[in-house]
Picture 1 (cartoon, rainbow, N blue to C red):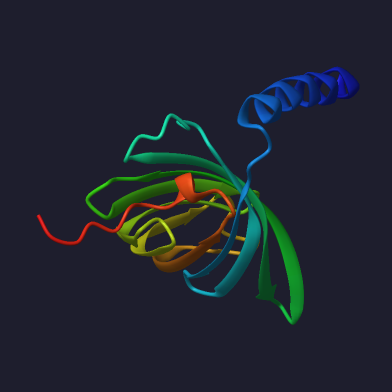
Picture 2 (picture 1 turned 45 degrees about the vertical axis):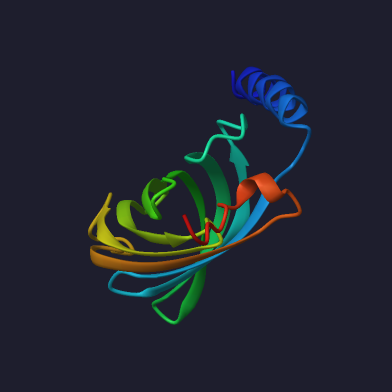
Length: 151
């Protein structure tokens, strides 16, 4: 059963990536919710039609220091950035689920606040109010917002 699920994910992923012409957006993310967490990963457009509002699907790997050890946590998130400079981000890892909202500078730099809930409190609790900073890098100019000066 596990092999069938992996094959299905690979087939769907290859179709999705070929439709996107493999134009990932690289990101680095720092967040603090009761402990520091640093994430790196890739994001892809879900609406690559040149719209001003951007919808990104991201996956990455986060690192958290807990009980004198470094723990790696996979991360999956959905990020909606508007033309007006606001964003909303919802995501999850094996340890917690989170929701952030805030301001975005041309989809290049996101600064937000939100809340994180742990799945199991006895394990590594990443919980409470969250602040986050995301930096995106891409060779695709469509990933970034347009700077409008004047009228």
